[in-house]
Image (cartoon, rainbow, N blue to C red):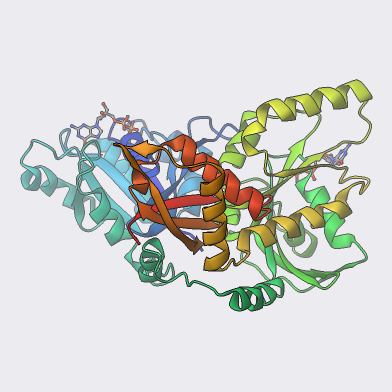
Length: 458
Ligand code: GDP
Ligand code: GDP
């Protein structure tokens, strides 16, 4: 399971600077869900082989009395859900009473906490940081988030216990294309058959009230679905193994349906962190959108997160019942307009309440999974690369023709194609896009993002 790292600290210590550096802002999901505080930010970070979810909990102003009342409920919830807390302080400003109040709270929660003294650039760091030891939370890490100094070290240190579980060494090897093996035609086919027998991990996600619970119940209540026992912890989504027409699934239930049916406990219905973890742990994401609401920023935020995680995606526009024709037309044109960037994903119009269209979701889910995990031989990828080159020659760079040599697979879910050749790094983006689309069409890749990487030489 992917760890969740919460950035905690009083305002102005550098939390969002660190957040932006860790996520490079590209996939920051600003939580603006009903009932949640607006300024909380969630992002996906990838650093030194470590993958994690980072949460900027917003400023906690502990200077006033009663830290509990001053910390927003969601901020506390973020700390509760976090695996690791990075407690940021300002080395220039020194220790403040707010820092003390926050540290007291963190100590009482018994969380894995690291004290980070930020803004150590241009000052005598050792003496400035000495006083933070008195927080009683152990070692004090020196960092200058604005310059990026100390950031990698701190992450490597604080996430070290997760290294093995994350297969850090393997992942690093993947990056160099060593571990992902190349297949002959026969091997690719055999591997394909094996994959068909693995369960598809399907995360059903969406903002509150779009109909996730109704849909999950509908799926689980279906005659053709065999559901197995699903034990689970209270904090995370429930994993429900099931089988349908000979194909195995694990349904990742972010809505908490199964738990509610079994145990009478109050569970939080919607949690961004739970949703993001489910996305990370899935093969395919089923994003549920409420037709009556149209497409909201929250929907786009979740979609962006799933995309950046490289997940296969199917979109279900729910509550399609009882809408008049002109409303349906307007929803469809809005979808065209706002979801154009993800034109590879299948869109279904369903009614979870009445069951209409639900059965057809499986076809797209399986298609997306198969596309995302399909093993393709090196010879076929090289052939496709060659055809794309024949159809449309790469441009000249410094008077010399860029020469593509061969292509092989560099990863799956999402599929990655690695193309080797001379001067390939100089190819213009337009040509890279052309090739990506060529691979997508030739391999009939549907429902998943696809990546193409270029490597110099043979
Ligand atoms: P937040 O309120 O905790 O999210 O703090 P911000 O990230 O907004 O940072 C507050 C201020 O501190 C901004 O003006 C940043 O540019 C500055 N800052 C952040 N990190 C550093 C750093 O490493 N060194 C210095 N000198 N300033 C920093
Ligand atoms: P969740 O928060 O995403 O799990 O949403 P729920 O499944 O709890 O549904 C929220 C509300 O929408 C409930 O009142 C449902 O009865 C209603 N609802 C769910 N699916 C449909 C649908 O297909 N059509 C209509 N009309 N209402 C629906």
